[in-house]
Amino acid sequence: MAILITGASAGFGAAMCQILVNAGYDVIGAARRSDKLTRLHETLGERFLPLSMDVGQKDSVDKALASLEGKWAEIDLLVNNAGLALGLERAAEANYADWENMIQTNILGLTYVTRQILPDMVARDHGYIINLGSTAGTWPYQGGNVYGATKAFVHQFSLNLRTDLIGTRIRVTNIEPGLCGDTEFSTVRFKGDEARAREVYRQVSYLTPEDIAKTVLWLYQTPEHMNVNYLEIMPVSQAYGGLNVTRTPG
Image 1 (cartoon, rainbow, N blue to C red):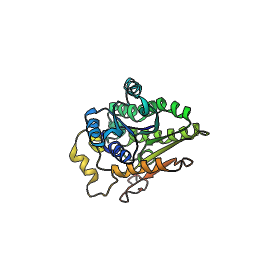
Image 2: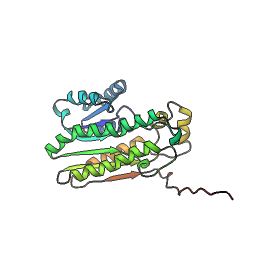
Image 3: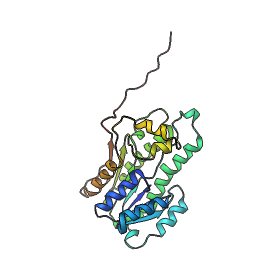
Image 4: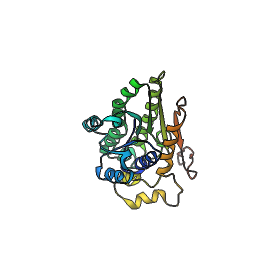
């Protein structure tokens, strides 16, 4: 049996691959950037299988999964990690193409990969699906509009999956990280503006990809009768804010 991690070329995904391989598991790292997967393979060795796959394209997912053979074809843990945020404009000024891209990857891609893997898990009556959500799926912020909505979908989809799977030994967890640095997240969100991305994490003690990867390892190694429905994680430097109130002059 193997573990399949999407979005494996950098950030959370790359850290998960490293930590899970080092823990003794066979890991398939799936991503669009095959060059980065090749470098991971050189580092991690034969317990790591690079898999070129774009979760936002059904044909790419089908071709990639059909290429898996032997132990690699039996997925015991699916980590739906691939996702992105684009832009931080308010809704009236947002780029609609960015909204479509986030929906395509964060919702349609995640659900399609899940739907392709799940029947085999059900047939074996064993498996685990871990989805990467976000605190943005629960706590709104200005400019989070569609990104937050996609992560709210992931939260509810995870709960409904578990409901559909009652009576099986298949577990489902949604991990909901808060502010996490040392990834490409903000660079992608701000479309390559490194200075703006760095400002997000300036003088902040943030979560790291290794924190999330170790959480995935812990979840996978918990007793099989135990299901963590969702797990919200924030750095100590982050907390909830109050509700905004607009006062009318006069």
